Structures are given as structure tokens and as C-alpha cells.
Amino acid sequence: MKHGKKYVESAKLIDKSKLYDAEEALDLVCKTGKAKFDETVEIHVRLGVDSRHADQQVRGAIVLPNGTGKKVRVCVFAKGDNVKAAEEAGAEYVGGEELAAKIQGEGWMDFDVVIATPDMMGVVGRLGKILGPRGLMPNPKAGTVTPDVARAVTEAKTGKIEYRLDKTNIIHCPIGKVSFGPEKLSENFDALMGAIMKAKPAAAKGQYVKSCVLSATMGPGVKLSTAKFQ
Image (tube, rainbow, N blue to C red; front, side, top):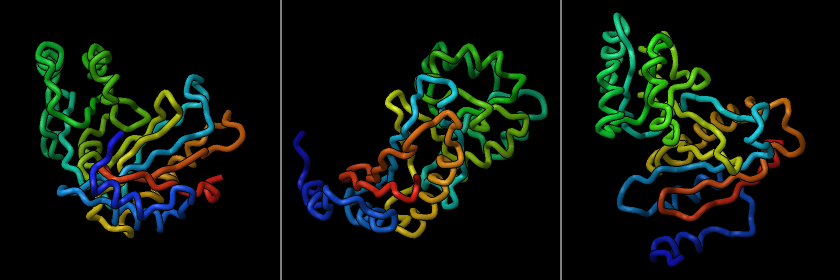
């Protein structure tokens, strides 16, 4: 794979054979985020679990102390008083059957987070094949199926992220923007890793955190030492 000039220059700053501590790694990620836009900083954590087993799933959500730096568009499935509550909290789209029909019939997907009240899951359940593969299906563990829609909308807007294993047992998550600087990114990193450590399944055996890599959207990966996470 051929990389651009900026990527090649950035890669020279990183020692591929070294495992960095988080502070040093985040400093490097900020230095290598040289694109013309404000790059997202992402973390990729490989865990020593098997996501095929229900008792080894790692999934949850956390509000990052400094947010994600991204404008989040929220779609809420609700009825009655919850409609007004969701709208007042800042949700872009609020409704029921008509939203479901728009998603199913028109392929409408102009949102980043879907929240639903428990009494609307009958409607939302029909969208499983569309929302599920995109990681948008509301889930009680992530706090996106809740009677308190106002709180869920506020948290989504202020930087709540969901972490979950993919099929290769890796968690991919944004922890902010390059413009945040190492200090704010470090606070977000610590909060997310703390949540992942707390979510360790009882059935997990051996080394829990196998590897951890940080990178900016267009930058090279920086490998972290996982010693403190064992």
C-alpha cells in the first residue's frame, strides 16, 4: 500500500519496535495528525477473549470527560411526553412508525445515534437488519433503550461513546480530536480503558489486553505498552 508524503514523514517519528506509554503515544499521535482537517484520534484494543461466546462479550458505553469533538445527530423513537422531552434535550429527529418507514422504505440514515424508549422497541425491532450491521441498534447495555430519553440524548450530545468487540475481538473507538492536545486525549483514554477493564468478563482467562494501538485518522499507528492493564 502506497502512502502519501505526510504519512511517510509522520512514520519516521515512530519507532515501530517500541511500546510507548499512553502519554508519549498521544503526544506522537498529535504530532503525526498533519491532515488539513481536525483528525479523529482512535484507539484499537485487542482483547484476550472470544466474542463468539456470550459469557465473553465486552460491551458498554461511557461519557468521555472531554467529549469526542464530533457533532452527533440523534434519532429518538418515542411517543407521548417523551417526544417533547427528547426534542427539548436537542434530538434532531423524534418519532415512531413514520421514522421506521422512512428508514425501511427510503434508506434514510441521516443520524449517528438511535435512542428508543422501551415501549417503542416493537417498532425499532423491525429495523434490526438495517441498524444492527451499522452498530446503531438501541441496546439497554449501552443506555440507548431507556425511559429517560432526555438524559440519553444529552449524554450522546456531550460525548458518550459505545465500545464493543468486533468479530476479531478488537474494540475500535474514537477518543477525541487531534486539536484536543495530549492532556485532554489522555483523560479520555484513561476513562475508556478504565471502563474496558471494569467490563472484563469473569470467563476471560489469561492476558486480557493483548495489544493497544493509537492513531489519528490519516496517521500511522503507535503501539502502546499494555503492562499496566494486566
